[in-house]
Amino acid sequence: MAGVMLLVAKSPEKTAILQQKIQQLEQFIKKHFSSYFKEIEYLTPDQNSFMVIFKKDNESKFHQDKSGNWLAYEGNVFALHETKQYSAQELLQLYLKHGNSFAETLDGHFVIKVYNKIKGKYFIITDFIRSRINYFAESEEFFFFTPFILLTGKINKPQPDLNALNELLWRYYILSERTIFKNVTRLDSASIYELNNKVINISRYWNFPTRLTNLNLKTHVDKFVNSILETARLINKSFGKAVMDLTQGQDSRIIMSAFKTQNLPFSTSTFGKKEFLELKNVKKMADKYHFEHHCIEITNEFTDNILEYFNKSLILGNADEPGYLLGRILYMRDIQSEFGNVLVNGTGGPFYKDCFWEEVYALQLYRETYKINLNRFLRLRPMNKNYPDQIFNNNFLEIKNNSAEYFTKMIYDSIKNISSCPVSMQIDKFALTKWQNYAVVGNNIALSTHNSMSPLLLRRNLEIGLPMPAKWRWNKSNFQRKVMYKLDPDLAHEKTDFGGINMVPYNLFTFLPFYFKYVLRQTQRYRNKLLNRIGLQVKTHLQTAWDYEDVYRKLFEEPEIQELLEYDKMVLAVILVKDEWSKFLKRFNEPGTVSLNDYEFIFKLASVEKLFRLMK
Image (spheres, rainbow, N blue to C red):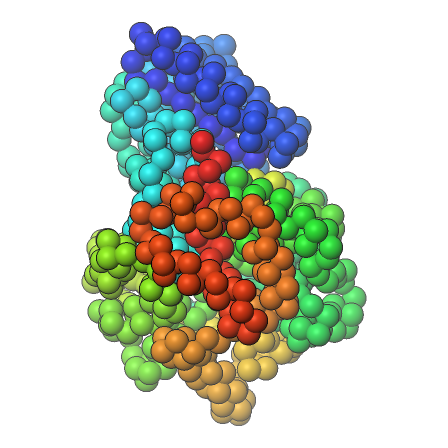
């Protein structure tokens, strides 16, 4: 199931208002969503609510018993301690037997909605992934939960959240619980929302660890190897053949090896142009070890329909990332889905390596601290790549100028319950709840259109990775090396994309050549961050995978995009200086004066504009 929308009336007696809102939502959904799903089902499962089920296949994920209790979910729900996937009926039985505590035994990528007839209450239970693209809005008459933010415009009048826009412009995604619309928030992770008449309460069924593991490295490695092998069997049992991302990086190689060593059916794919070095190296690896591999390129199917992909990605991807990026991801996932029954990705790898802040450990001579150096963190992470601001008026510049304080508060809010823990744990919590949104959102759009799994973000594996000390994970992870070597010693000897180092555990003799390569690559990354900081634009790894300039130019020249950028028609005109905006747009007609970053910046604004236009 691609998604479940739920509208709950606060006052049961106001049936006319509920029926009017149901009609508005049905008409809007049929207009904007019907072409994207196999089936859209409209239900009134009880007298006080309205549910819409967006289906991508024939599988039913809704069940109602004879007593009037019901449960619906999107995504996939597994037993935490078994190799088992649950059905809606099994989940409802678990809930009725154990109450809300049943959530403590679950794993997967899901949002579950439950109605308890006797209590007259609704419950919404979230995970770590689907929560990021499920949204909550509230009016005087209704509570509203939806996986598609476009629908919230039928609950409240849409207005831009300028703090969220500032986040989007600094990065290429929204880090916080905010969305591009005021009064619409994304759901919290690992939480239970309880609706009782006009009151909503939120509780957590899982909390971030507050201390490091007391297990030794060997035991921890063995525990994770067993878990990732069991994860591979679980995915195979649930879906059959998997198709997975495979790069030269460490994370995807470990996941692939968990399938390969157990002879489970899989194929792999890599995105990029033929001369892209990583693509060539991965293909050599696939040929050497005789597993099915596919190279995915941008073809005319994408470029000839680029506006269609742009718009589709905004409707299904909620503008949490801009349409130019999500559109390309959506196209890639569509192609990839031809090679297997479930898309498997390596999102979440830094919880098992790097500590998200690896260069700082090197600068500190590998000393663990208990206090984040916020200035350094802001400089190297949220604010390491500035964006053009001459086009904005003073009202928006005031928000941008307050960015350091804004991101500082975001960090402190994230780590407030573990501020006495090692910095590595503090950064990991910030990453799990905020920073990783960029990868989670990109994979969630695939989960709305295809079966998709992120094994490293399953709870069974996260609970092993999160409490590990930083010393196991820095220098490209002694932990991951031992895991990889135990899974497949031959594949461990293959070079990674990080300075050509491999994944074999190093010893006294191999450490020096390894560390020499490692430092060269790490300092290059550090230099790139500094160059970006002072305004010298360095291509990202993603930007080098393809020659995007012609693709971006084609999208920019689309008449619909041009109309979205007309000042007098823009919702964002309230924060723009008209003359400066005109000057900025004219640059795009001058050859050699526009960078990929400029195109990406303008597409962020166009994405926001498009979403507002669609809401009308």
